[in-house]
Length: 345
Ligand code: AQP
Image (cartoon, rainbow, N blue to C red; front, side, top):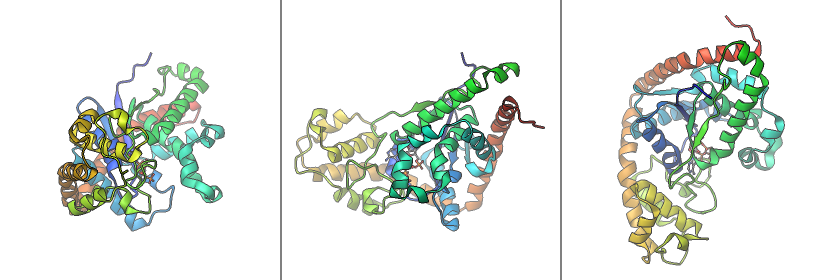
């Protein structure tokens, strides 16, 4: 039995090139959840520095992710937007969780393997322990729901394992202090909708990604209409026309990806996209796709640009958000320390 109220936490790294995958897989979900939950949306700058970032670029990117959150429809007054490094509890709890998580668990994380690649020995220790910081982000607020793209599923499962191990390792102390036995609730991943994994425009088997060296693989949220049209026009497809039904998308990852993107942007089921465009040429479908993408993204990029003209306003929002995040996090961190046996003020 848990007595914890429902609370949403999620984050986006300020590593530049925010793309359609981040938007459809995460940010649009953040916006929708505001109606039903108390939400904290974090610009996870401490995650970003697990890979070297140029300092002036990092400052810019922290503000740009913040501006994009607001431009997409997140209300920083009703909910909390802040940057992670401003709330020191993230780093403190991450250290504690470094001592709870097991090496074997982290060794199984596929994202580290993909990102470190052949240069594992040269990867930062932070990149390896990244999932523990992510667990700390969530547990620091006793968040119950975490909207993420499909690529974060394994990290979310690890967060649940860490929460469970903490609750069990310290069960006696948790009870002795009179705290709820589910001291940390096990966070539920929210991975739903037609675009939980948006794929590269050049390779339907690879994830659309900020760090892909080719800009043609992704639609950046700041791309103008002409660039969006060019990228969709040049997006890889196969020689067959679009099928009229779902079954016809089997083994056609590029076609499936574009149909999923259209469905998510237009807010319609994939089946109705296929009904409308099935049997037709890709070129016509790509034109319609460009139209719906520009219609959705142009207002977001215009508003992001407008907000970026006033960095002091963005900084004030982050500072206010951090103060409110602190107010939730501080007592939870204090209780965590007490449970472990660390003396606190
Ligand atoms: N291709 C994607 N499709 C759907 N969702 C995605 N997300 C990322 N890529 C896709 C989701 O966006 C949120 C923020 O991601 P992040 O900033 O933590 O970065 P990431 O998951 O490591 O992926 P990126 O943005 O493409 O960066 P790189 O190039 O570094 O891998 C998360 O909820 C993520 O699931």
